[in-house]
Image (cartoon, rainbow, N blue to C red; front, side, top):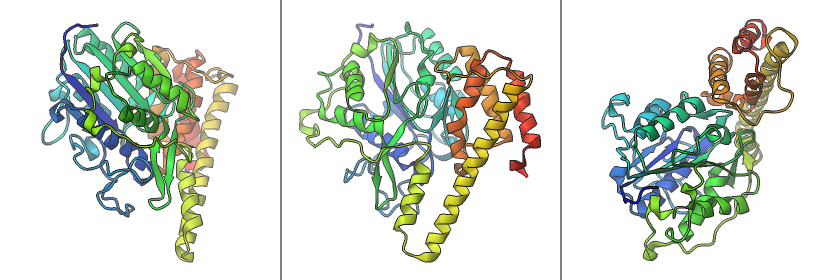
Length: 415
């Protein structure tokens, strides 16, 4: 731990787009308001979000984003450092390590310029799968993220770093985080379980937040940040999250630091005095699109529009079935043929080598079968644990790749 007080940096990232994922971008807008209010200068904050929510055609309140029922508008003033197609894993990693030359975008290339005495706070909010965090059109894999963090530590680019990550299987992104590089990570769930949306809004017809974010931000807003530590934040999550079990990784000594070490301290004059809202309407990230459509069908009075919504729902169910069928065909082929042995029990851990194998398998499946970056195929993320298990079986990755190619060629799903 350094005894020198340096700068405090933050990078806030929503990898999601589309109205159904409203809560994931709302999380980032809310986090920005907390960081900004706590005195972190905007030139030390990087925000990445697709920014298609505030003025979305589905938004009944133009320019307004809330992150809790009847909550304040968290959109005003939010930085637009990276939006739309510039929200990529490559730009995220470049911005995190302070490498302007590696950023691909027009206009200013804002990055974190942290040094050996500085702290860095990272918050990531989106969908995920084992060893993977989604961006709008590509994915950040755990193998690449961990390598980047290790290189930053080796290059003395921070004194301490804290990472909060909210996505399904988020534990798998940080479970290989070394314990000796002064990085502490908190995830919404273990490596083998899902995360949850909360606060369904009947007017907006979508979920306003995600469970971990709702709990940690409420606690942060009501607390004097020089009086609580990140261990206190984690314990509060553990005590108040209802569906997921939060996990912690990396250097636990960092968790003993006061939150104000990273986010300064909320001035008493602006500290929140509000009733903390317990997360409600909890639904897994994967099931949310189905629940949203069910709500809309139930609410719609116009027969023509109601029928159109029902058709959309039926198509979504059909797509879900096709995805499950295709993944099962790959699994059965690997189980019965010469393509490897399937791990009977669901794996909770992938080594760095297995994470590299999983990346190769997942990318082949995405590019040849179902691209989960298209909203209609998003459900495929819920099935990628099957490929993680196959990679954990200890058999060759080439056989799994061959099985995917065989199923793609022969399955009637793609006719």
